[in-house]
Amino acid sequence: MTAASVENGLKSSARATRRARMLRSLLPALSLALVLIAIAWLNPRAISYFGFSLMLNLAIPIALATIAQMFVIAGNELDLSIGTFVGFVGCVTATWLKDAPLLGVVILLGSIGVYALLGALIHLRNLPSIVVTLGMSFVWQGMAILILPKPGGKAPDWLLALMAFKPPFIPFPIVAALLIAAVVHFGLMRTSYGVILRGSGGNSAALKRAGWSLLRTKIALFALTGLFGVLSGMALIGITTSADANIGNGYTLLSIAGVILGGGEFVGGRVSPIGAVIGALTLALAASPLLTFMHIPPDWQVAANGAILIIVLAARVLISRRER
Image (cartoon, rainbow, N blue to C red; front, side, top):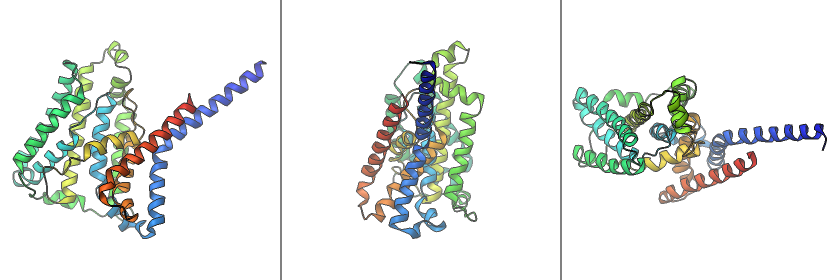
């Protein structure tokens, strides 16, 4: 074998690897595009300002919950309490935040602090995050029921006005999704501290040798999870106008699916804020609008989300094998 043929083979392999990586990074956008094409084919009138506003009505809280889950996954952890936490925040928002704003703010800030303490506890005691957060899910659920035993309450007027905002030309859910993706992408992917946060999941040993505190990074990741969980619960109540202790229970699986659908992985600190938001939008569109247009009962919503996730993961496996 000549040197020229070896060089040509290496160049061909490098090009194939670049194509595989590009295809893997574009996979979340492709899945969203396929869902949009299916909706446009089934109901062309849905592809409009009003149609997108209606279909993506609940996309904002789902996207925020997905980003919250993404921060935990970036540290090789998993949060099974984010759904009930969103419900707890919703109950606080619809009661104390409206009737006693100062007390409501203190409680919400305190809940973020609890999340930060959970991160410290998990790291210091080397506890599995799945077990700890699963236990906390019952705590958040119980506290939500104590605050609001039955559905009711009312969102603050300023929150209702914010979530009802109608910008020209582009629906508010799309504007909010772009803003969330841009802010988190810059903070996590373009700043030095964002590299440190991702490094805690990618190579914690190297990060420790460089002199960075793994305890602080774990606290920061869980605090950011709590912050975006609070934003998700508030956005959800701003849309639904009232609260229920069980209103966010489905967000745990949705948030995990959104992160994985957006290109994230459970190990290695490999996450994508833009992909996570795209994954959340895909799930929001596939859950109700697509099933409704296909005349499929709402009971199949979870099955449809699972099917989409399996298809995307299978495609990612094939692409990864091609890349290797």
